[in-house]
Image 1 (cartoon, one colour):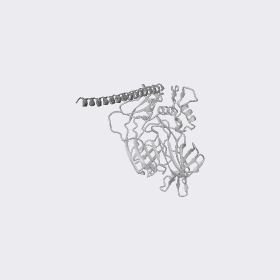
Image 2: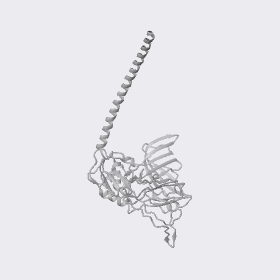
Image 3: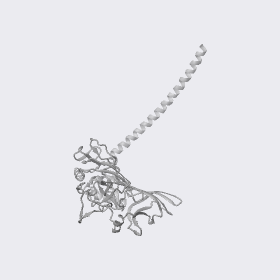
Length: 430
């Protein structure tokens, strides 16, 4: 669901003379357009199409200021301006300064959102077994963020805390995978769970260039039957749909993925749980040590037959109220907004990441950005120990080779000297 906006916003966003204006609140000090030189923000639900992700966002900002405190909290805002009319300020992310440099009053800042706080070992303040919702609340509290009120949780249980080091991000990924979705920090700075299919079905209603319905006698004009995307999604309610159309500088169709026919959870290094017909289409794959057959089936019921539309649209005239997980019609393609590259000009590049796929007949499997080393401590320890032993052996071999080279060099010198003496003796005999 997109951010809620005022009636004035809805009017201004449809006026071609309206401009976008950004501002930043840095530790309570307001910096407007006169201070900012440039900024960019890139955020996404995943790197490669799939579930079980918890993505971080980076802000790069250049602006003039007297002082930017160490570790400053940066809140980004946007509004619409048209002549003397100006809308409300809409939040567009909360970031924490990581690096800062200054030269002649110009500060260059690198900052991250709260998801970076997930890269810390999870030390739960609850007892196991616990529900995944309770675990999410415990992690959110530890990260000092709120859970998005739109999140929906299923009554799944985490039986025990895994052996060894278990990061907050690992736990969030497990919860996301079980619910068939992905986590990210929303524009309001809240921890948000977005299901894989979070956007409304595609329709063929006749609209204006801004996506407003064209009516005939009070009735919407349907050009073609609606293309149902999925049954009711889990994890999010009431997602929005936006119309960009040809109001882009470029649009690329990167193809549709094969229809999802199965869901596979990797429980550990040896065990998997699969629901559906593996090999009949695309296999939606994720790591989840808490996975059950019930979870796999529940996700399959939500995503079965869904074909992910990969695309990219440059400099899109997208309503800034749109969020990741919303649907968009761009260049005649309808898909989910999975990634946004905002260069600070108000017209971001939007996409559903994915390259053009070859039409192979071999079953297609989604990727995951997570391996099993975070789930199986013994495996990690074994690999670490083995690598240590291998390094020791390699160092010994390197030493032996160096000694052997020295001996070969010495032998070569001795042979050269002997050859010289033989030559001298042969000269005397002659």
